[in-house]
Length: 190
View 1 (cartoon, rainbow, N blue to C red):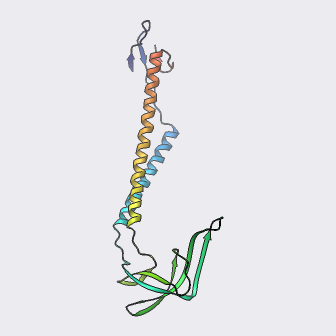
View 2 (cartoon, rainbow, N blue to C red):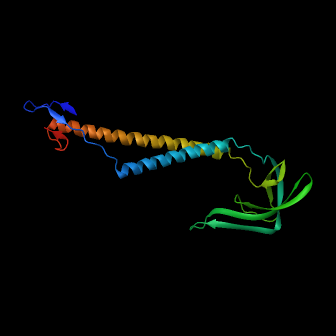
View 3 (cartoon, one colour):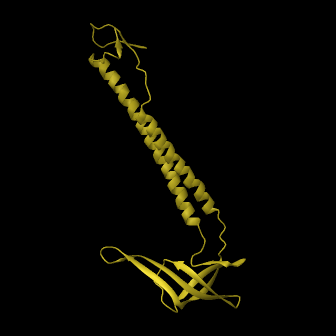
């Protein structure tokens, strides 16, 4: 209970009875939304740090040749007819340590034709671990960490300004009611 002296001469001192604040469903719902986004940000940071610290295994490069038999490439186009993505499943022959191998690969970087050259990345300790892309996750890890940190900062800014503006509005309403002498009956006790 707070005693406030009214600025008018004829008024008595007014007792303001503070209203009990109850949690509403919307406040609980927003708490879980904020908590969910913070948890998502932490997840992105943890996964990103794993990707940044990942030791790549496919460190060596060899060149393969696309065979005639099994090329299956599809072009996905938008409604204007321009190509949006290419998906190819192809068989390539390649040589590692003067031994010839043949394997089926999936790629989406370009459209392949028979006898095209293709760059293959492989693990020197495990020759079966070969693919058309290198297992380097550093940049995806840095991106994930950056998005996670920005998400957490953004959520804390939203929480700060949301509750700051609510308290500011409540305080301004109380002050304006006392100055003008017009108040809500439920807040005043004479």
